[in-house]
Image (tube, rainbow, N blue to C red; front, side, top):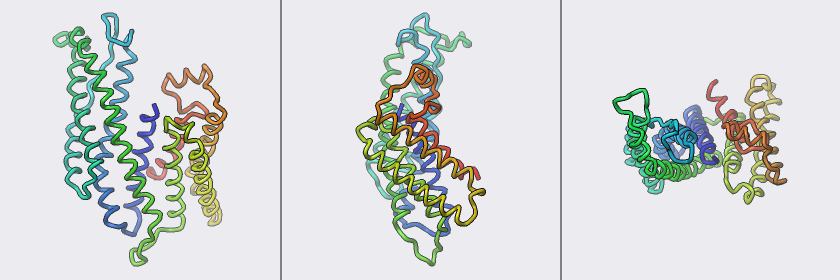
Length: 313
């Protein structure tokens, strides 16, 4: 669950990072530019395929009556999208400098897992499709189940490794963007741009910790990161107010404030070891965890709204 939620953090975070890079008047160091360029193909793959595959896996396993397909099961299995565009993007990115061998290795594993899943789900979907008698062969579909379990598990692992590596590199570049002054001749970002991107950087760190399966063990870091984000938010809202632009940025600031609230609620639930109620468990089972107060998904949903909003302006 954490991995799947964190994926959206990654996609939106990187989109924001690229938007910042292109929108500013100044030019970043060549190394940072090269890393961001190399990441784009991998980000496209994660964005276009991860949630799609996870949804197919969820629907498939939820449709099984006894954790395996039986003659009584109304199996719901869809074919995953063709991985050709992703594979082509990864091949192209592999050749770009810098070498980044860990990223390349993770990307290649991701591409292989996508290709394997596409082959298996295409065959399985045809076998379970009652609307097409000419290919309907549920016994053949049921025979594919062990391979599907293995393939979905392999994809989960490969997606996680690629996500972690892309995320690490993205955050590395984001930190460099904030820490390295740019030559005056190239122009400088406005004070609001600097404050905004500092707030995004701190929000990104908060979201990653919220998505961690080891959140309880990392609670001191989460508290520290929440405080860092609150300071960045306070600096941003103070400046916006000082220039009389609070109405112009009301939606963005509201989203930023919501992330503070959701972060505190997650902190309280985790620190006080508050179990989910039966009603909350039902909401989580129905894929509505983002609406559960004090849940990691609520924090991540707030982060996504915060970062996605400016991109739509």
